[in-house]
Amino acid sequence: MDIIIKPIVTEKMTHQGEALNRYGFVVKKDANKLQIKKAVEEMYNVTVAEVNTMRYAGKKKTRYTKSGIIEGATSSFKKAVVTLADGDKIDFYSNI
Image (cartoon, rainbow, N blue to C red):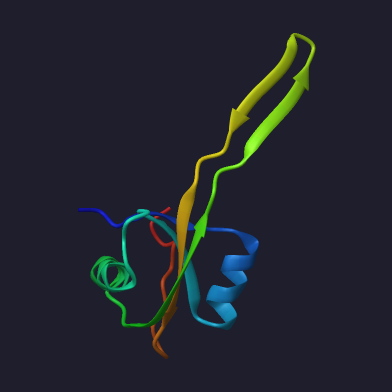
């Protein structure tokens, strides 16, 4: 069972990775902190010190176009911010 869906590679998370050794991931909604910790440690071969999770609800979106109003929604997701032990690092750009 894959817990981690994708890493979050934004300006803010990249800065936290460099300065505070914290990395963000989009994870499955039903995953708990212990499962997330185990998945990150196995996938990236690092030691996880702390896991913080956040749940985001989807939002309704409306766009006005020439052909009329288009309505849709963003999907809900769960985000995990993982703090690594001192000396460990994750490099998302190494295999590009």
